[in-house]
Length: 233
Image 1 (tube, rainbow, N blue to C red):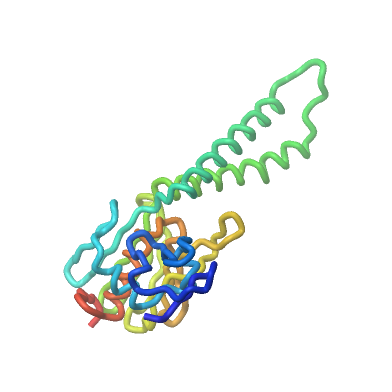
Image 2 (cartoon, rainbow, N blue to C red):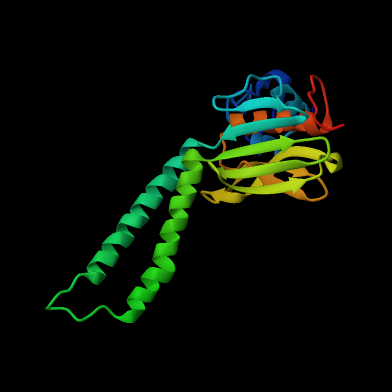
Protein backbone atom coordinates (compact mmCIF):
# COMPACT_ATOMS: atom_id res chain seq x y z
CA UNK A 1 0.00 0.00 0.00
CA UNK A 2 1.27 3.46 -0.83
CA UNK A 3 2.24 5.86 1.94
CA UNK A 4 -0.14 8.75 2.56
CA UNK A 5 -0.01 11.93 4.58
CA UNK A 6 -2.69 13.79 6.51
CA UNK A 7 -3.85 16.67 4.25
CA UNK A 8 -4.35 18.88 7.34
CA UNK A 9 -0.98 18.59 9.12
CA UNK A 10 1.23 16.42 6.90
CA UNK A 11 1.68 13.57 9.39
CA UNK A 12 2.44 10.24 7.73
CA UNK A 13 -0.46 7.85 8.18
CA UNK A 14 0.11 4.25 9.20
CA UNK A 15 -2.04 1.29 8.20
CA UNK A 16 -3.84 1.29 11.58
CA UNK A 17 -4.85 4.94 11.00
CA UNK A 18 -7.04 3.87 8.07
CA UNK A 19 -10.53 2.57 8.80
CA UNK A 20 -11.63 0.67 5.70
CA UNK A 21 -15.14 -0.05 7.00
CA UNK A 22 -15.84 3.60 7.88
CA UNK A 23 -14.09 4.90 4.77
CA UNK A 24 -11.94 7.40 6.68
CA UNK A 25 -8.35 7.95 7.80
CA UNK A 26 -7.81 9.36 11.32
CA UNK A 27 -4.66 11.40 11.82
CA UNK A 28 -2.84 10.41 15.05
CA UNK A 29 -1.48 13.97 15.44
CA UNK A 30 -4.28 16.43 14.71
CA UNK A 31 -7.12 13.85 15.13
CA UNK A 32 -8.82 15.08 11.94
CA UNK A 33 -10.70 12.48 9.91
CA UNK A 34 -10.28 12.48 6.12
CA UNK A 35 -12.46 10.59 3.66
CA UNK A 36 -10.49 7.89 1.88
CA UNK A 37 -11.87 9.10 -1.44
CA UNK A 38 -10.19 12.48 -0.79
CA UNK A 39 -7.00 10.99 0.63
CA UNK A 40 -6.45 8.48 -2.15
CA UNK A 41 -8.14 9.99 -5.18
CA UNK A 42 -8.21 6.55 -6.75
CA UNK A 43 -8.57 3.72 -4.26
CA UNK A 44 -5.45 1.58 -3.82
CA UNK A 45 -5.69 -1.98 -5.04
CA UNK A 46 -4.61 -3.13 -1.59
CA UNK A 47 -7.56 -1.33 0.01
CA UNK A 48 -9.96 -2.98 -2.40
CA UNK A 49 -8.43 -6.36 -1.61
CA UNK A 50 -9.13 -5.73 2.08
CA UNK A 51 -12.68 -4.53 1.35
CA UNK A 52 -13.39 -7.73 -0.58
CA UNK A 53 -13.14 -9.67 2.70
CA UNK A 54 -15.73 -7.48 4.43
CA UNK A 55 -19.29 -8.78 4.85
CA UNK A 56 -21.76 -7.50 2.29
CA UNK A 57 -23.42 -4.23 3.36
CA UNK A 58 -27.21 -4.22 3.84
CA UNK A 59 -29.02 -4.85 0.57
CA UNK A 60 -25.92 -6.05 -1.33
CA UNK A 61 -25.91 -9.55 -2.78
CA UNK A 62 -23.48 -11.80 -4.62
CA UNK A 63 -24.29 -15.16 -6.18
CA UNK A 64 -23.24 -17.53 -8.94
CA UNK A 65 -25.72 -18.40 -11.67
CA UNK A 66 -24.04 -21.16 -13.63
CA UNK A 67 -20.89 -19.56 -15.06
CA UNK A 68 -22.11 -16.04 -14.29
CA UNK A 69 -21.18 -14.02 -11.22
CA UNK A 70 -23.87 -11.55 -10.17
CA UNK A 71 -23.34 -8.51 -7.94
CA UNK A 72 -26.26 -6.30 -6.92
CA UNK A 73 -26.41 -3.24 -4.70
CA UNK A 74 -29.16 -0.69 -4.01
CA UNK A 75 -28.46 3.04 -4.27
CA UNK A 76 -30.07 4.72 -1.22
CA UNK A 77 -27.28 7.17 -0.37
CA UNK A 78 -29.06 9.25 2.33
CA UNK A 79 -27.91 12.74 1.27
CA UNK A 80 -28.60 12.27 -2.44
CA UNK A 81 -31.91 10.54 -1.74
CA UNK A 82 -33.10 13.34 0.58
CA UNK A 83 -32.04 16.20 -1.71
CA UNK A 84 -33.42 14.60 -4.88
CA UNK A 85 -36.77 13.65 -3.34
CA UNK A 86 -37.31 17.06 -1.71
CA UNK A 87 -36.32 18.91 -4.90
CA UNK A 88 -38.59 16.74 -7.06
CA UNK A 89 -41.55 17.31 -4.71
CA UNK A 90 -41.03 21.07 -4.51
CA UNK A 91 -40.48 21.49 -8.25
CA UNK A 92 -43.48 19.41 -9.27
CA UNK A 93 -45.81 21.01 -6.71
CA UNK A 94 -44.79 24.48 -7.91
CA UNK A 95 -45.22 23.45 -11.56
CA UNK A 96 -48.65 21.96 -10.84
CA UNK A 97 -49.78 25.14 -9.09
CA UNK A 98 -48.56 27.23 -12.02
CA UNK A 99 -50.45 25.07 -14.54
CA UNK A 100 -53.65 25.17 -12.46
CA UNK A 101 -53.47 28.96 -12.14
CA UNK A 102 -52.79 29.36 -15.86
CA UNK A 103 -55.70 27.09 -16.78
CA UNK A 104 -58.23 28.54 -14.30
CA UNK A 105 -60.61 31.06 -15.96
CA UNK A 106 -60.73 34.47 -14.29
CA UNK A 107 -63.03 37.21 -15.49
CA UNK A 108 -60.77 39.91 -14.19
CA UNK A 109 -57.67 38.59 -15.91
CA UNK A 110 -56.56 38.26 -19.50
CA UNK A 111 -56.17 34.82 -21.04
CA UNK A 112 -52.87 33.09 -20.35
CA UNK A 113 -50.39 34.01 -23.13
CA UNK A 114 -49.28 31.20 -25.40
CA UNK A 115 -45.63 31.68 -24.43
CA UNK A 116 -46.48 30.81 -20.81
CA UNK A 117 -47.87 27.44 -21.89
CA UNK A 118 -44.86 26.86 -24.13
CA UNK A 119 -42.46 27.49 -21.22
CA UNK A 120 -44.48 25.35 -18.82
CA UNK A 121 -44.81 22.42 -21.21
CA UNK A 122 -41.33 22.53 -22.77
CA UNK A 123 -39.22 23.41 -19.71
CA UNK A 124 -40.92 23.03 -16.35
CA UNK A 125 -42.87 19.80 -16.99
CA UNK A 126 -39.90 17.87 -18.52
CA UNK A 127 -37.63 19.14 -15.73
CA UNK A 128 -40.16 17.92 -13.18
CA UNK A 129 -40.32 14.50 -14.80
CA UNK A 130 -36.52 14.29 -14.85
CA UNK A 131 -36.36 15.29 -11.18
CA UNK A 132 -38.94 12.62 -10.31
CA UNK A 133 -36.96 10.00 -12.26
CA UNK A 134 -33.76 10.99 -10.46
CA UNK A 135 -35.49 10.80 -7.07
CA UNK A 136 -36.91 7.37 -7.93
CA UNK A 137 -33.47 6.12 -8.94
CA UNK A 138 -31.86 7.49 -5.76
CA UNK A 139 -34.52 5.88 -3.55
CA UNK A 140 -35.33 2.63 -5.38
CA UNK A 141 -32.59 2.13 -7.99
CA UNK A 142 -29.87 -0.48 -8.03
CA UNK A 143 -26.57 -1.24 -9.73
CA UNK A 144 -25.91 -4.71 -11.11
CA UNK A 145 -22.83 -6.39 -12.53
CA UNK A 146 -23.13 -9.72 -14.35
CA UNK A 147 -19.80 -11.27 -15.28
CA UNK A 148 -19.46 -14.31 -17.54
CA UNK A 149 -16.28 -15.77 -19.08
CA UNK A 150 -16.65 -13.92 -22.38
CA UNK A 151 -19.10 -11.09 -21.67
CA UNK A 152 -20.07 -8.80 -18.82
CA UNK A 153 -22.75 -6.17 -18.23
CA UNK A 154 -23.22 -3.10 -16.05
CA UNK A 155 -26.88 -2.35 -15.44
CA UNK A 156 -28.44 0.70 -13.74
CA UNK A 157 -32.13 1.31 -13.18
CA UNK A 158 -35.30 0.86 -11.18
CA UNK A 159 -36.92 -2.56 -11.35
CA UNK A 160 -37.27 -3.69 -14.99
CA UNK A 161 -36.50 -0.21 -16.36
CA UNK A 162 -32.74 -0.40 -16.80
CA UNK A 163 -29.84 0.93 -18.85
CA UNK A 164 -27.20 -1.71 -19.62
CA UNK A 165 -23.68 -1.52 -21.01
CA UNK A 166 -21.71 -4.54 -22.17
CA UNK A 167 -17.95 -5.05 -22.09
CA UNK A 168 -15.45 -7.86 -22.55
CA UNK A 169 -14.23 -8.99 -19.11
CA UNK A 170 -11.09 -10.45 -20.69
CA UNK A 171 -9.99 -6.93 -21.66
CA UNK A 172 -10.38 -5.54 -18.10
CA UNK A 173 -7.13 -4.05 -16.82
CA UNK A 174 -8.24 -2.08 -13.80
CA UNK A 175 -11.14 -1.61 -11.36
CA UNK A 176 -10.88 1.52 -9.22
CA UNK A 177 -12.91 4.05 -7.26
CA UNK A 178 -12.46 7.52 -8.68
CA UNK A 179 -14.25 10.83 -9.36
CA UNK A 180 -17.55 10.36 -11.18
CA UNK A 181 -19.49 12.67 -13.51
CA UNK A 182 -22.15 13.51 -10.90
CA UNK A 183 -21.41 16.46 -8.63
CA UNK A 184 -22.96 17.43 -5.31
CA UNK A 185 -22.18 20.76 -3.62
CA UNK A 186 -19.61 21.40 -6.33
CA UNK A 187 -17.61 18.25 -5.56
CA UNK A 188 -17.66 15.11 -7.76
CA UNK A 189 -19.17 11.99 -6.26
CA UNK A 190 -16.95 8.90 -6.27
CA UNK A 191 -17.90 6.05 -8.59
CA UNK A 192 -16.70 2.60 -9.63
CA UNK A 193 -14.63 2.70 -12.81
CA UNK A 194 -13.82 -0.32 -14.96
CA UNK A 195 -11.13 -0.01 -17.62
CA UNK A 196 -11.91 -2.59 -20.29
CA UNK A 197 -10.97 -1.13 -23.64
CA UNK A 198 -12.89 1.97 -22.54
CA UNK A 199 -13.72 3.39 -19.14
CA UNK A 200 -17.14 2.50 -17.72
CA UNK A 201 -18.31 4.26 -14.55
CA UNK A 202 -21.25 3.66 -12.23
CA UNK A 203 -22.28 3.80 -8.59
CA UNK A 204 -22.15 7.54 -7.82
CA UNK A 205 -25.48 7.30 -5.98
CA UNK A 206 -24.35 4.48 -3.68
CA UNK A 207 -23.09 4.74 -0.12
CA UNK A 208 -19.33 4.54 0.33
CA UNK A 209 -19.52 1.13 2.01
CA UNK A 210 -21.60 -0.39 -0.79
CA UNK A 211 -19.37 1.15 -3.45
CA UNK A 212 -16.19 -0.22 -1.84
CA UNK A 213 -17.65 -3.68 -1.41
CA UNK A 214 -18.92 -3.88 -4.99
CA UNK A 215 -15.70 -2.50 -6.47
CA UNK A 216 -13.66 -4.97 -4.42
CA UNK A 217 -15.75 -7.97 -5.40
CA UNK A 218 -15.79 -6.89 -9.04
CA UNK A 219 -12.03 -6.39 -9.04
CA UNK A 220 -11.57 -9.88 -7.68
CA UNK A 221 -13.91 -11.35 -10.29
CA UNK A 222 -12.30 -9.57 -13.24
CA UNK A 223 -8.65 -9.45 -12.22
CA UNK A 224 -8.35 -12.29 -9.70
CA UNK A 225 -6.81 -12.13 -6.26
CA UNK A 226 -6.94 -13.81 -2.86
CA UNK A 227 -10.21 -15.66 -2.39
CA UNK A 228 -11.19 -15.03 -5.98
CA UNK A 229 -14.37 -16.58 -7.32
CA UNK A 230 -13.52 -15.22 -10.78
CA UNK A 231 -16.08 -15.83 -13.49
CA UNK A 232 -13.48 -14.98 -16.13
CA UNK A 233 -11.48 -17.84 -17.57
